[in-house]
Image (cartoon, rainbow, N blue to C red; front, top):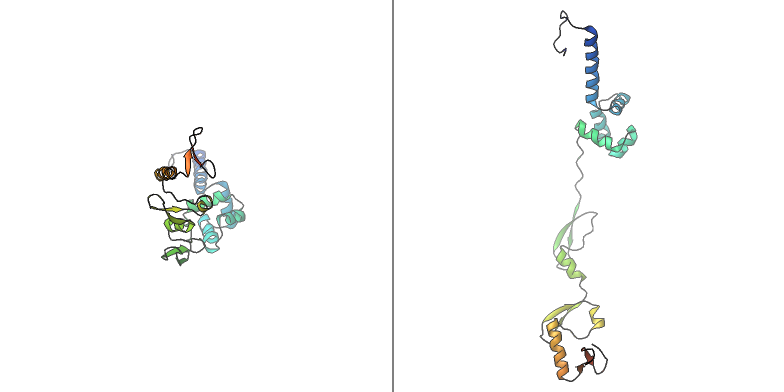
Length: 192
């Protein structure tokens, strides 16, 4: 409204003074909130320099700066973004070279992060505590876990081989089908 006034122009002096005051208030509001301005006045530094000093030079975290300035930590991060203060670069973590106990290949690991195997495959292989056994019907090699040996003593690879094995036992007369339950029954133990 009163952007290009000169001394000798006609204008309302009170309105001109109010507009100058409003412009000052507007400039202050652009600089930040009331708390933002209070902090600047208290430390007698522009916010950008104050945050640089605390964050980069003194190595304070956002929470520590918030406690020192008496504000919420989210305000600190918002002010850092507004003033353009960059976060200091993170330290590069040390990398350790280890040997995989399964395949004996080498792999890299960051310090502080425990990794025992080079890949998911090696991890699964290490967890397998069982053995490879040979199917008594077809001769195919099948992996069976350790607990399996406590329960079973006859390695069979599939349901088809199980049926064939039962037929062989019926033929040898070691088991028979029960007429009541239609299940295989051993002459020695009972239901199989």
